[in-house]
Length: 600
Ligand SMILES: Cc1cc2nc3c(=O)[nH]c(=O)nc-3n(C[C@H](O)[C@H](O)[C@H](O)COP(=O)(O)OP(=O)(O)OC[C@H]3O[C@@H](n4cnc5c(N)ncnc54)[C@H](O)[C@@H]3O)c2cc1C
Ligand SMILES: C[S@@+](CC[C@H](N)C(=O)[O-])C[C@H]1O[C@@H](n2cnc3c(N)ncnc32)[C@H](O)[C@@H]1O
Image (cartoon, rainbow, N blue to C red; front, side, top):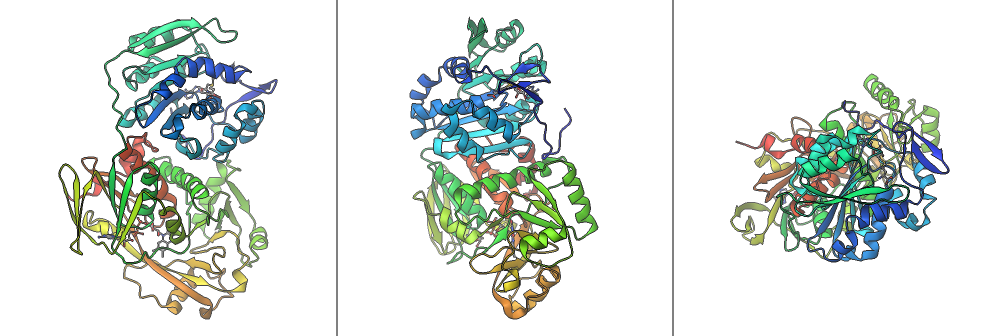
């Protein structure tokens, strides 16, 4: 199937039958009106989930669903998981596939019929809209449930899951439409892949009793039973995998991880691992953290349909959810791109053609000026989701965790891998006993990857009444941010040389990039400045993944997009270390694989 742009929607075609959606493409209903009983019977009880959760002897239980639809099976399953108390210690990993998505209004209309799952739907709706095709990771931490939703054709999505070792399924929900009308969901190739992703005693449930589904499942090593069906269905199929694949689930308890570098990458990764119960030592060479006081997420979505475009889009919305949930100071103000060049105009026009009114809004100069109490000549594009983050404040909030120890003044020197990993620091100290080591050392990664380019940069904090009413990030050739702690930060300088920060010179350069936004601002209005470095690789993609034996990892090369990339890449490395389903596709993993730039 031709790949769509990651922002292109593929909406379910539905009509309503007594407040229940009916799919007109597949000529079938999504579920019976009494769907709570139906899901309990056809999926939860058929897979004996409540009994299995009581006896769970690994860190997480993984469900694979074909057909996410409106997410009712998902929400009803969370209700059971929550009642079972299994979530006290374990996580439910729910991987679901659908090539079609839904409108939020339709979701709300469906959910109104089922008050018993309202609380769970209320938590889930915080993450809507599902903004992109491809993978979307949603952590409902309150219930210890992790959803990996793959918006793609089922066969491609299963192929992608097969390329990763952490995707063995414990229980399947086979919930395509009626096999007569939805052949792609029940094809030989799909059922073969279901077998390949199973292991001894994996179970499945499905409402269908179709003969060819039964035969294909049997061919792929499932023992299949035809039993009494639900509601008006006479029979349904249930069964168990009898093949020889064994459960390969690793345990994350007992892991001890060392991270080098307490910038944004090291901070996000420490937080992710610590929340998984992993003990983390975070080593930083500076005596005090020197972190960006305020930056903006950068939604410069690519117009291409490739791994880079999928990554930038997915990571952007993941970051938004991450900051919304974990960081009190997040200013989700939306981000404006001024239409101030031919390239910008082309980009804005193409994005608007995607029809994502839920994400993008064209604004006239008059509207931009009125909303922000400024006076400048350009209209532009409002990206409605996203905003500003102080890396400095984020770090102080999310590093406060009993599983994280921050060690300042530790300049990393070298490491050795034996049974465990030991580290030497330039202050003469030695630490050992680590199961994993992760380099998040920004521009110092150049010693591992000489191709990393370093751009120095600076921003200035302005105190001026004319900027005080700006309430979104405004991007021109540079940017001006809404007021935070009494300052409007503006940037930014790019230089190959280290910047000796001088407020007047920095101001002149930043002024040039934002001339029509800063025209009533003067050098004496600069009250603060910050400088740092950006690490960038020749292909403008980050590096994230394993360097050595799945024990030594790296996360970096985030360029000017750290705020949009770091949270998702941290979730990816945490998942690899803890044996959890990867939140990104294999195509993306290959595109950001650090081995592409290692010195041979
Ligand atoms: C002026 C400027 C403005 C920016 N604005 C934005 C913005 O608006 N939005 C955005 O998304 N991004 C922005 N960026 C980019 C963003 O700041 C980076 O992408 C992000 O901070 C990278 O984080 P990192 O943790 O990977 O690297 P770094 O922030 O460089 O952190 C690496 C850390 O490792 C430590 N370290 C290095 N070597 C060692 C060692 N040997 N031992 C121990 N510790 C070590 C360093 O001291 C440092 O603390 C901006 C960057 C600059 C310079
Ligand atoms: C019966 S509905 C699933 C109902 C859903 N489990 C729920 O709880 O709302 C079947 C789903 O299969 C999806 N589907 C059909 N063909 C597909 C394909 N080839 N690839 C991926 N999904 C497909 C449809 O979009 C639809 O959402």
